[in-house]
Image (cartoon, rainbow, N blue to C red; front, side, top):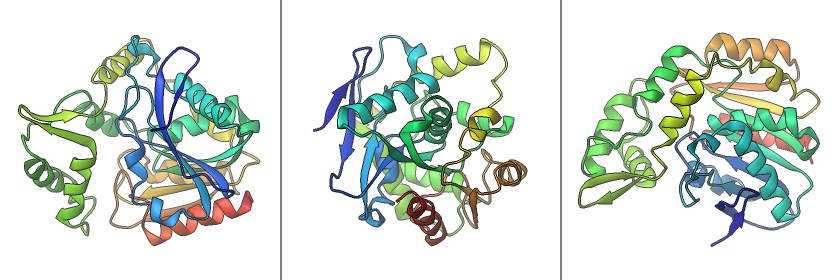
Length: 277
C-alpha cells in the first residue's frame, strides 16, 4: 500500500492511479477518507486521480497531538504529498473539510494549484450544520450492525436525499464503520472531536472569505446540495457574486454531501478541470 511520511513523522495513506492525465488530488470530508470518492472514481479515467487519508482518518496514523487535526496542518500534509509524488501542481477536488483545505491551499500555496472544485462547502458554515456534525463526531453509532446503521442513516438522510436507495446507505456505513464483536467501530481517531472543541474554545472562527477569494485566477467551481445545512443557498449565491468566474451547480434531492456521481456534478467537475489542461 502507498504511504508517505510527513515532516512531523506521521505515516499517511494515499492512492495514486498514475498515468499522464491531469493530476487531481481528492480530499475527503471531516471524518471520512479516500473512500469518499468511490462513486466519482469510475468517471475519473481521464485524470491522474490521487486520494489522501488525512491524519487520524482511514488508514493513516493517528497523531500523538490531536491539536494537529487542523486545516492548516492538513493543507501542509497535502503539499507534502505532492512533493512526495514529485508533482509541482495539481487540481484539487475537496469535499466538505477537504474543500476547506483546498481554500487554505489557495491562500498558502496558490502556485501549487491548477484548479479547485468545492463539494458542498464555502466560507460560511451555518451554526445548525455545525451542531449536527458535533452530534456525531467522535461517537460510535448506537447501531450494532451495518444493517441497523444503514436503516438509521436512511431514516435521518431521507428528507435531504429522497431518491437514494437503501442499498447506498448500506454501502456508506460499510465504507466508514468497521464491524466488531462489540458493535461498529469508527475509522477515524475519536480525538478529532477534542480538536474541534479546543479550536472552538480558542476564540471566534476565523473569517474564511479571504481564503475563498484566494481562488481568484484559478479555474474553480462549487457543487451544492439543494438541501445542504453546511453550504447555505445565500452563501452559495454570494460566492458567485464575489468570484464571477466561479462555475456553480445546485443539485436537487441532495443534502450534505453530494456523492459526486450525479450527472450535473460530473459535468461541472469535468468543465472546471478542462480549463486547467
